[in-house]
Image 1 (cartoon, rainbow, N blue to C red):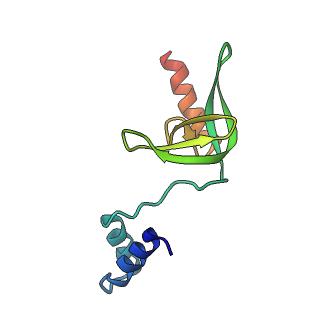
Image 2: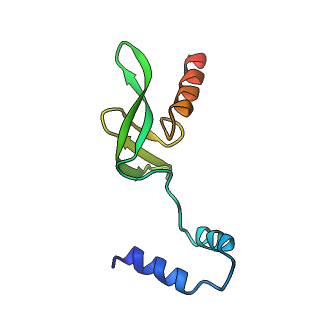
Length: 106
């Protein structure tokens, strides 16, 4: 068992008795986060092309990390690398909406 697993197990074991919906609040107040996707998930990214602008493209998550500003960054194989919700999205609709806004502002 890794140190993170041990810490989470200890956190849960020491949690006071409470309804399940309060348990989520308790865990989040103690630093537990839920990521919006996992490795291998299909997501949508905004891909930049040299002379052809930007397009929305589907790809697979192959790397996740926190940037210097502590925002979650996702690398989508063959598509892009960027901040979740700004360049990488769960649905095509979300990505298209942001791309449309980017095109309007440029």
